[in-house]
Length: 65
Image 1 (cartoon, rainbow, N blue to C red):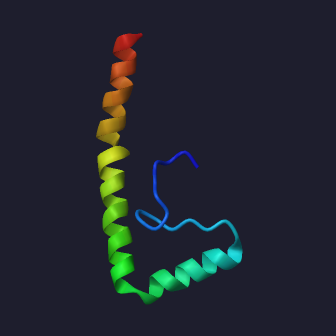
Image 2: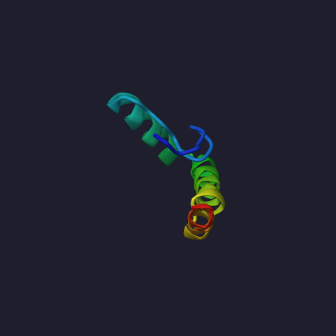
C-alpha cells in the first residue's frame, strides 16, 4: 500500500496465500520474468524512492515552512 507500482511490472501482488504461491512459482519458473521484474523494480526504487530524491523533497518542504 502507498507505493506507486504496477503488479506484473515492478513486482507481483497477490492478496491471498494460494495466489501468492502461484505467483512465486511462476516467477521462479521464468528467468525473463525474474529479470524484467528485477530491472523494473530497481529502476523504480532508484528513480522514485531513492534517499536523494526523498531528501530533496523534504528539503523543499522545510524551505517552504
